[in-house]
Amino acid sequence: MDQIEMTSASRPFSGLARAVLFAAAALAASGAFTAAHAVDVTTSAGKAVMVANFHGWTSQCRTRPIEVAITRQPKNGTVSITKSTATIERAFRGNAGTCAGTTVGSQRVVYTPKAGFRGSDAFSLSTGNPGQVRKVGHRFNITVR
View 1 (cartoon, one colour):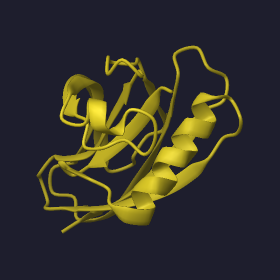
View 2 (cartoon, helix red, strand yellow):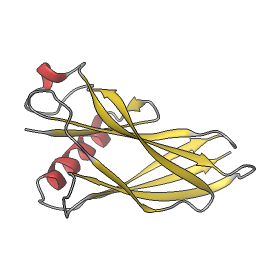
View 3 (cartoon, helix red, strand yellow):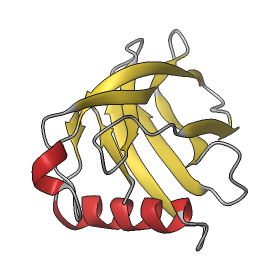
């Protein structure tokens, strides 16, 4: 089974939050439903922060393309999405032992606050298989100190 994982702020989600993200991504990838979740991120004024790194893989531990699109822009900063790589931390089912530690392609999401801005900002993304109608929604709540 193909899998999708999201890491945030250079570290993976852990425990229940990670399980929920995986389950939502897997169901959306199958076209079963559209899920949504929120992620809270804090950064310093003027400092860019990686808020997410979406990566997917096949049962053969190869990169699985993921489409990431901005659905709502932040009002007080910018969001960039760039191709990157990520290491599979662990899988929740199927190829857990086989793929852990493998590097695959990813889509890295970085938020950069406007110069001089301090306060709250937010933006939204959708992820899914390329060309897929149903997507997983992600909302990022940013605090700039």
